[in-house]
Length: 209
Image 1 (spheres, rainbow, N blue to C red):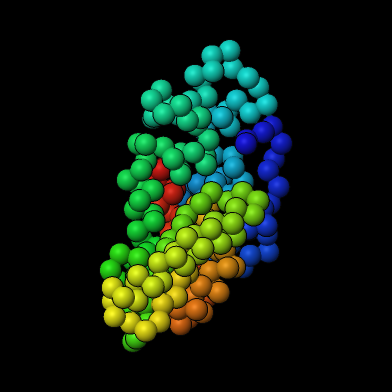
Image 2 (tube, rainbow, N blue to C red):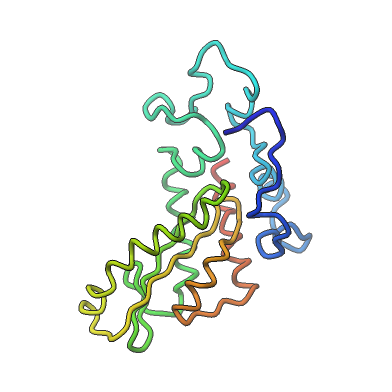
């Protein structure tokens, strides 16, 4: 919910050298994207809900998403535009697929399954809007979901072992610490430089605005 008070720094961003690496002057970002990124983190992006924060418009439609609000009923908040808006779905999918492509670029990757040696690794990518503990909750929920598929995957690909994991990267660039556990289970080591690259996939989110 967007309110009249300045949103405090979320735990996802506080003291996060990895997720905040793009803030450094050598990030290579355009000035416009840099400013948009800051606005996204502090939830001050110019949306209709932000414009009316602390007030109630006489016409409730003034809060609806200008792109799809009349058909979807979604309010125009930064979270809804970057996660749910029907018009921006192509960009939302592009953001998701970019992380998938970067994560599995060097291995055989049929959909969400990576094959290395005699082991299959089920990997899913999630890009939620950072809010409280929802990053960890999304990670645990998806890990549990895909754990049910291990036997089927082993039979399908003729491997002896199967692991499951999730890579959760926030829409505003945060890195879920639980990702490291998933990567370790899959035998994947991503250097900090590469993790920063994955977190910077939120530049696709900036295009939405």
